[in-house]
Length: 356
Image (cartoon, rainbow, N blue to C red; front, side, top):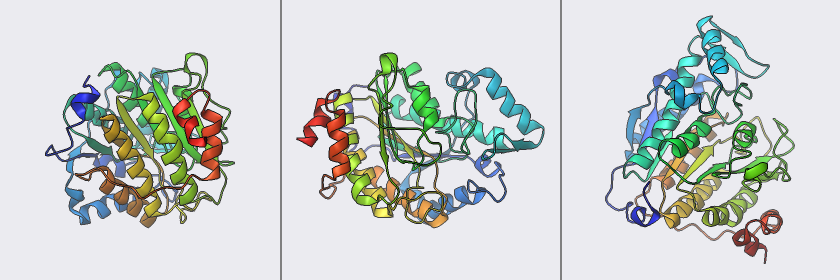
């Protein structure tokens, strides 16, 4: 493991950030469905038009079975393979599988794992795994919410098991609560899972009172917000709650489950975040990673309005991959953030200090 002191100087004159993708993301054919092939087409077109932002682009490998089964059961993985091999079908009312879905899922999880390998095994400072299907709803033995394999959970487990990371921060800004990631690491003190999500909304999980269990008590931080909240609330929660959490937790790597369905134009939710709002949140997390001297990885989740998705993702990557650490504009302390900081203060004093 690289120490923070080694990492602090790695942003100057080092290799370009890494972007992992794979054509199999287009083979996960869900038809006229919100989580459709057009999502990855729009994302890749926007990046291609900008010369991929100068990032190094690589095709992701398929995940190795033992890496995948560190999160999912063997029986579940075999079931997804079998349904795909039989031509596909509906796993539940929301989650569809086609003949190409299993391969796409293997590369989505493999991209997330390879991202961690690059960030913890080389001097790369930042990277992104951009694939579909998304993953944060997937449970160890159940698909749900458009998700087959929990890509960010595979990445976090890879950091712990392969690279000896002592602590991993997963920050989930998808508008839907990442119930799968929440539950997978519910009793795990080495993984701090923090989520901002609209509530009430699918999947109906993630209340503020769900803070983990057993040895993981306090390491699950749910920050539900009502419909109608936008840049002011979301950016304040990131700057004044999530960032201080990260500083106090001191992870060896920061992973973002980056969904863009909190966007004001997204059809599946009621929040009002804008492209500049996502850029501001990314800046707060980039500054956090820089202050800690640790790498930052982006793992794509949801986002269903194509232009909003592609524009917001580009804005995120521009901040994450910038050669110089950003100087974000001051973010006012919103009452929602002050309330959350006060609630968390007993367990996380640095966060509690925000509330005064």
